[in-house]
Image (cartoon, rainbow, N blue to C red; front, side, top):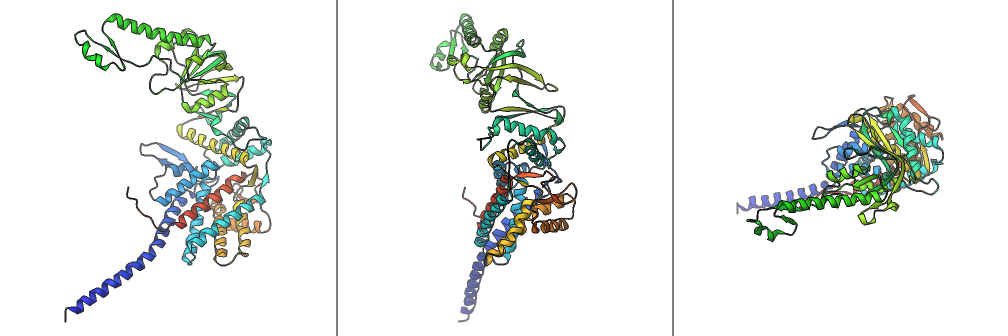
Length: 555
């Protein structure tokens, strides 16, 4: 009977370890949730120092040695190597904000990080994740109403106000010292492509930005016409044409590619079975005749283009064969036709709209009705070997404009492009939703103060969650003050006091170093940017809180 005792002890141990495993499994959702929150907060902390006009820039080095210097949240996160799946959700969040509003990409990630931190504290108090996520959602809806109440309407005809909005957007960029030039440029570009009375959106693809290195950002200009980032083709072809008639073609001026086989009569029989794409030539007379046919074919195309009255020809980029060959360029140059090839497929709509010409896919349909008209088409040097084609005096410009952006080096040029895109997006936000808010962390503090008061009307755990949501939003003015080298606790306390006394437009003035009225300082931002940031951040946090396990897929 003695051996039965160890067996019983082993059974007891197994059942105990089974219970222990079950107990550990109960802890698993909590550890997964904590791991997700830590990963997402790490991403938010990485971009937090870039927030605001005094935020720091990040230098990003890619695998091939390319360097990017920027403080644009979407660009930093897009180029950052992120492995954790939840951290990738914050990268997607930044992209979503970039698509929706175009600005506030750093703010939205900082907000999401603050909300996750608040959620972690609530979880440690034993509040269920579903309760937290639903409370955050209702608090975000209430925050949107508060923003609506504190917003003021904007008139799109008021250029001075629009310039202030674009300048506020550019203040936090590397090229902020050039905001006096880029802000009015962005405003004028958007106003030219919209009808301010009826339009509710802006197609930014109709603003063509051509980047050329050389000179400084101050040499950038808005062109009342089209810019084409190509050189003229053909030796002896004109580089300047007045009273231009412009044609845009999508067919090639080159002979069809055939596999020409020149064989001796002894071996010619073996190639008769491979005649699908081949031209079998057995003597020199046939070769000569084939070349004459090719020459005649090209000459006929060029004559037909000339007969339509065209003297500037744009040719779409071709993949399968040459868009235009040397012989065709020779004929076009003799006919005094300026030829510009390799127009990208996605740019066809832009050029057809701005030049007033119709894209033609077949030579049979190429006639005078398809042509656009311009006073002058000329090739302009842009420093070094760089050249662009400038088209001015367009008869029917349509809803499209071009911007020539200059920069002393690649890093400045790329950052100027990103900054200008943000300024354009800010003006687009105002077209979408014609309302504005004071900047400098004023909207976030106003929401925080009002949500704390409204939290008193809520019951149970929801009250705690609303209060935590309000506290989390205070991180935006806190970070603005911290990045500007101010005392964050003193500044945020002073700001909270002002908002509690009804000064809803007061924010952090990073230039003067204390709290002032943002409307008087001309620091304004579109309602859509802040409203979208709060909505997107709370939805992202809600998704993260709902995750209780990470399962690896089979494939």
